[in-house]
Length: 288
Length: 274
Figure 1 (tube, rainbow over the protein chains, first blue to last red):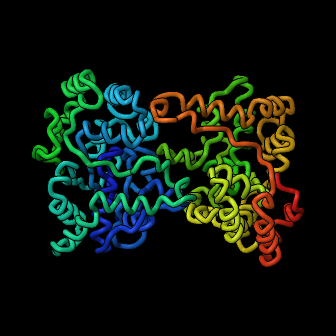
Figure 2 (cartoon, rainbow over the protein chains, first blue to last red):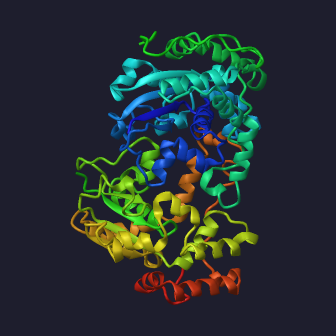
């Protein structure tokens, strides 16, 4: 059974993409995490339940991961991996979303943002095989880097900002890439409607019954954030953080990867459309 | 092929305690105060290893032992099963396991009786564990100890360790495990005693607390205050009401396989749980 990875650095829209794809595949709303896991499994959750990804059968299995493609646990799936949907998001918004998701204390918001800038991501996430932000994006989306680990995989890069702007078009594009019949626009619209943030938060709330919480995560913070794009770092974290981030955008691998996906711009209000995506599929990398 | 042995158990049955002891024993000749990362590396947790993107080496370079809570026939263990690995299987009185689970999951006082009854109705387990590749308690014990219909699952030698013995005399239990695993020339009793004195739940807690107090974890709201050592295991199911104990006795009376498993490891006595 071919494997299609839905890969991303954490807090970049991976779960939303899974929900969109699951909603389309089952032509109905995702009713809970069990349902989502069945339709578009999370690699880690699959392992933690004692199972391997299925390699028999002909239908592709769509699998979420935050791992780098170079980690050992992906090796058993090297030959079966034929597609990669990579979800990339403006690091500005990744910082905000990670800050909220990790439940950073009020007095440490700026420390956390500085940490992210200093480590090019969250150091704890690097230690668990997720890499830094630029390392993750490069390893999954630069064909010659990905090809070392998943030599048969085609890449489709989805920018979170484009997904926010026109989810139906992006879903259609992903379905076409996955060679799934996307000929019914109304079905695509239904999947988009069913993935609305308020609906997902309601599903999450129902899933967080006593006794279940301990098995899912500390549910003090909602998994689903406000889904903003192009946010300023100065507003929440301070002018020095915004200045530090701009310095990061001017140097090395981080700058090159950010430029490739159109993330060099100054922060924009959420209502303003994100910049046009840089072409990504099967292009030569602009760095390294 | 790896010769890594498994330290296996159903959840809340002492696998982490034994893992910590064994790791401390292995490191004691190098340092008297091994750090948490070193301990984790020398006797890794199979799931924790995966969650860092790593696999157990299969070329003979793997650790002496690795911990797993999976049932022996879980898919993720299949690639290791052909080797005739040794297994140290920890078994615990289901009563003590249920009590420990209530504390571990932080089930509120008012919900404990209902939660315990639900566990009993599920053959002594938390329902979610069935979906996490553990099966129920009887299935787990049978699969790892090579009894019942799952006898063919494990091919290597199995040493069953009762949690209650580990709790009562950790140094002696550790020595018997070292002997079983064939580490060195056999157990060094003095070293086992030093490992037992070092690798206590309190030491583990302090190490975890220090870890939580570093890096990004230290920036999180209430990161450290919400983390407390587990209170000592104590009490009985009857503490939650006579009907809870009655439910457990009904399970023993009506489920022949469950009763056989309980009896085989000396847990038929109502006061055997710790």
